[in-house]
Amino acid sequence: MGNGAVRQMFRSFMTAALAIGVTAVFFSASFADEPGPIKALKVDPKKAELGKRLFFDVRLSGDAAISCASCHIPEKGFADGLPLSKAYPGSNHFRNTPTLINTGHKAVWFHDGRLGTNLNDVTREMITETYIMNTDMRLMQERIKQDPVYVKMFKDAEYGEPSNGSVRKAIPEYLKTLTSRGSPFDTGKMSDAARTGYELFKGKAGCIACHSGSRFTDDKPHNIGTPENPDIWSDPRRHVTFVTYAMFMGVENYMNIRRDPGANVQTHKSDGSDVGKFVTPTMRELKQTAPYMHNGMFKTLAEVVTFYNRGGGDDPNKDRLIRPLDLSTQEQSDLVAFLEALSGEALTGAEFVWQGKIDPNYKPISDWLNARN
Ligand code: HEC
Ligand code: HEC
Image (cartoon, rainbow, N blue to C red; front, top):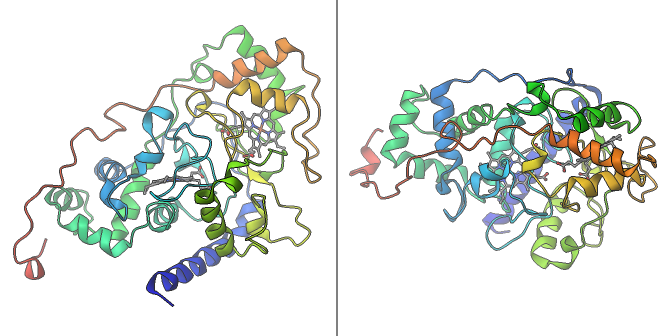
């Protein structure tokens, strides 16, 4: 067995261990608060500033070609505008890149909810996963230690020497700065159409049953019958990523299935009743984050609302709340107006985007082995 294979096995073991630890929280806790502005989280400014530079630094990826911001693009609401993510160079992903706005407020992450510990673990997963950043943490740490700007920033942030452990703390600190603000819903400046839409959202259309709280999500998995995205199965560079994922998540028959198992990777229910469940996404910042769903199958909010109005997709395990709604054309467009009123300021200013050039042409540290830095 090659080194790579051993690493893969270890990683899969870790993922499985985490997943088991998490299942209990996953289905019981409800983190929903009241609809209203989302409270900003407390952050340590120096740690967040360091995390910001790391987020935009390509040296965190194995081949130094991509950074977190290659897929989580500030101008696209920290998503990427694609139906399915690109993945590490040479492969393609089988899921839609989620927004990172308000991710610090979440308690379960990924479309299938497979991580429910903390953002530190999510960050580790993103950095080391072969089809995301594909880096060995030790290599990344050595790269970072060579850069005098980092040496100073880690020290100023009271982390001491650059280390992979502090990278996994600093990036989450930065992510915690990404909180929605300034939406018409929060500022009380909704149009009449949006107000009517909100009443439908809470009443006749029944959306609030799952899209609840200030982020408009119950953080739980449900099956709404989203159709499969055929690109996952026709593009070998996506399929190989899917197979890698499904194999390590312990999905049976992973070579042959042509369905994203969704939350079934958590429960492994043998009757398959959790297949096709995905964690309810937030309704915040949707204007910035098209296309929609875990696999980008809908291009516009109008398409999504039409889908719900028809009673969702075709799936025997579909949630019973998803049924034909009988909304008029006017009501459907009011609902869209409301969804749009939940989008606020783009987080694209200096507060959120690293402004300096990240210059890799620093002087090598002489007598490296004996140097303290
Ligand atoms: C190659 C594209 C790509 C890169 C690079 C990338 N991500 Fe992601 N990220 C994704 C995709 C795709 C998902 C969803 C995966 C899933 O649901 O299975 C995701 C999910 C996440 C989530 C969970 C969001 C949620 O709401 O569940 C966080 C947090 C995150 N990424 C942070 C980061 C950080 C930090 C980095 C850099 C260290 C990074 N990502 C690099 C594509 C990428
Ligand atoms: C039974 C729970 C449930 C109900 C009720 C529900 N949703 Fe959803 N919603 C979900 C889930 C789960 C997803 C993600 C499905 C996926 O990724 O395939 C979703 C996805 C969405 C998305 C896409 C968001 C994105 O970022 O991809 C929109 C928009 C949306 N719902 C709006 C609505 C509206 C409007 C209503 C009412 C007509 C509604 N939902 C009712 C659970 C629900």
